[in-house]
Image 1 (cartoon, one colour):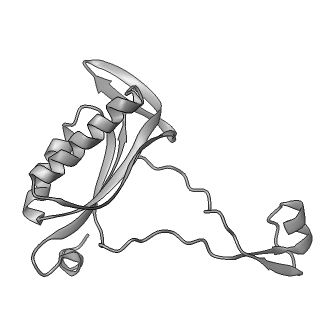
Image 2 (image 1 turned 180 degrees about the horizontal axis):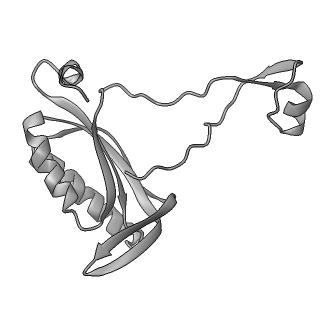
Image 3 (image 1 turned 90 degrees about the vertical axis):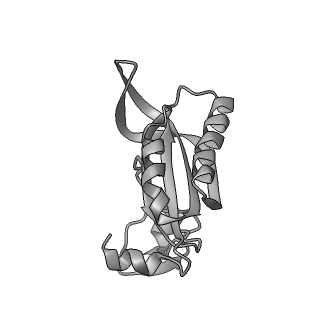
Length: 161
């Protein structure tokens, strides 16, 4: 992100909004996941961060296998616990936070980005499909079209953080 874009996202008081998306190793139990998620959030709090929103980690299948070396042994994972947290933090503290997140033992992958405070959820657009195809459940487009409003999100490939 260019320096000009970063300044546009910064608030007047010097606080920046960030989002941390992460994958935790799938070998954790449900209880351990919540403990590790709380620990991860405490790292942000200790740096002076305030939370805007979050999603607790949920088990998900990965789009591709991810390898991680744990105690001199390479392990391969096809699933993980994926979660995210959006927070405000002074930009001077982000380098130290990222160093701590990188060293967080159960972390498989993470992505730390600058973002905006507003909720930016995906809203599906309406799709045009043929009347017969809509009834048959296919999405082939023909000359004779009917408007069908999609109520489900389009499938996306889960990218690792």
